[in-house]
Every structure is written in C-alpha cells, then in structure tokens.
Length: 234
Image 1 (cartoon, rainbow, N blue to C red):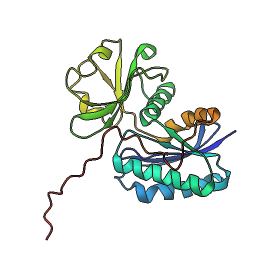
Image 2: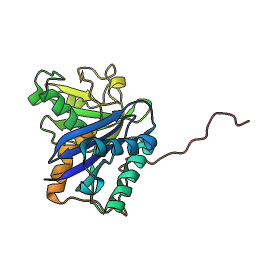
Image 3: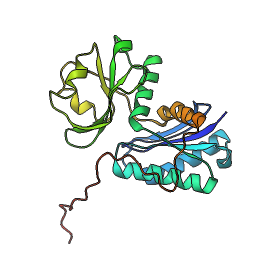
Image 4: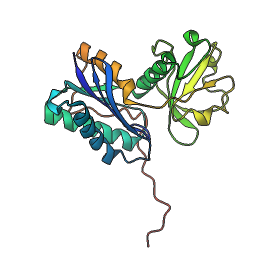
C-alpha cells in the first residue's frame, strides 16, 4: 500500500494532496493567483501535520509534468525533485491532461457534472496557452488517449473530426474561451487538481515507472519565449 504525495502546479491552481493506495486522503488547493512558489511548501507541511504522515513515511512523490504554465511547471517539478533527493524517494510524472481527464471522470461518477451520452463521448481537456491557443488532447470516456498532445490555435475548424462524435466535451482552464468558437461542443467546468494525479500515480508506482530525478524535465510542448516588458523603468 503506497502513500504518494501528489503535486499539480501547471495552471493558476496550486494543488497538493496525499493519497494512500490511489485514494486521496487529504487535499490543499488555491486558485488565488500564481503564488505557487510560496504555497506549495506550506500546503505540503499542512498535509503532513493534518494526516499525521511524516515526510519519511511517503513512498513516492508524483507531479503533474505538463503541458502548462512554464513557471508553474518549473515550481512544481523543482519542489518535487528536491523532496525526492532529500527523502530518497522515487519521482513519478503524470501527464497534466491525463490527470485533468481523471478529474472529469470522477466528477461525472459523483454526479457533479452531467453529460448525456457520456459512454460514447470524446473528452478534450484544454490548458490555456494564451490568446486563442490551448494545449489539448482527445480521450475516450474511459480515459484512454486517442490523440497526441497538441498546441492548437482554436478556430471553428479545430477538432472537426472528433466533433462529429455523439458528444464532444471540453473542459479545463483553456476551454471557456473556446466554447463560443467551436460549434456543437459541451463545455463543463472541470479544474486541474492533485486528486486527478492520485490514481494515475498509483498505477505508475505499481509498474515501477519512475523518473530519473537528475535529468527529468517538465513537458513544456513549446519553447519558453522571453519577451521585453512594455513597462518603462524609471
């Protein structure tokens, strides 16, 4: 029975949870801006104190590997790697879109979201990549990926093949801006969370699917671009 610390910081939500045998037992989350560098350590400390689980008692650290915010991913992955180094625990990386689909599936099963024809639906988690671009991937309702991850500039022709299915469901922090652009889609409010990482991390743990802590890097999908600030320095 594995105890895994789960971290998701790839969007404006900072989410940290502790799971035992794939079941989340405690969760801390905040959507109050991009203050992840300060909050992630505080959340981890609060979870250890609340659950009575000591840092040495965890069996692994799992982190959302992206795609997502460059800065957010760097914070989460760096923190996770630091813990793994210090505690001598394995590192597990979970695709952030895979975890987002897991959250949607759990929300549907709990009756939080209601979608007709769910079993035949195609699920498309979207993470905001600024302007009308999103990081996206298509899954079936069981959570099986049907496409690779793409960086998509969304217009009325995007995902046309998949929108021909009985139900095309979009969600995530990039989906709201696309709902009016894409005809014949179902938009539901589903947010990234460490609870989506928990069951996927347990499966990876059971397979022994661990990352090389020294060389692992987040999955950015696109290169980070440095821009010049428009603010005048006085």
